[in-house]
Image (cartoon, rainbow, N blue to C red; front, side, top):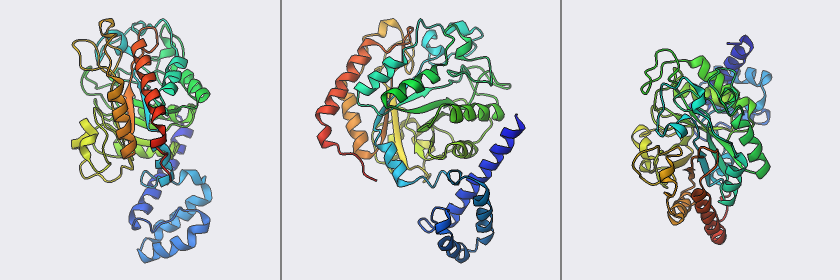
Length: 386
């Protein structure tokens, strides 16, 4: 690892952990944001609770670190939570090897030519999301097979080395900025190409590469609303608490969530979930059993594919041409959109681009219909106020 990056990561992690410690040892609401105008009031609280050493360290950190770095997963402001809630729903885009294999998981790929789309239309993706009244796009950056959809420096197993030869994430970022759509990222914590991995099973550990990839995503592609971590093949050798600290040190306002495994972060993910209050764990779907007793979540997300149940092919990715007319009805999607708004959830609807890098015609038509329903009923759905 680059020594400069290593030192900077350590400094940021120390700041994030200290801030979380200070938030934890002071009763909720007693510790104010550690800016200079609040130091006198905080001094009283620290003295009362016998944690003066931590307060002295905090003063030292403040003297040498930008204020925006003094954050923790537990200190997200109510205003930031409302910003995310007001995004309401978004498009979850899964596009990778599995688009072309016809399988949900695609281990053992050695030839990048498997990923051989005839195009990549990020403008169509984003314009469709805009027409549907969506506030964000959640983009799959890397699945368990280790194929990266951005121009990473960590591996040659990436889209710019495939026949497409383009940085899809960079193009998507520009399209989102052009149309006023926010960007969130999916990231598989593991990678079957790492040493010690079982292809199609658990990933071996490689924490330094995991951190290097996350650093690229969080420093080279602008503000990221949240990261959707997939724990299906393990944590890649970096625990969920460590992963959260690392990401927060790079982008304090980026929310962090894990679809299962040890709970951490501040957004509750709901793979195959449904609209629900944050206090109702059943809404987390596949994640429900993993989050019991965890109190760090500030808001909830849920996701499922636009494809109904079917035989053969993938579920989260484009399936097979024979399924091109299968799609959940607009009324079902609109009902869950209303549920998301009711409970302050995020609803990430999975829609997979096809072999041409485009959304299916039936997906575009259905999402526009949902957008029409949203616009017709908009007056009954006021924005969530801070």
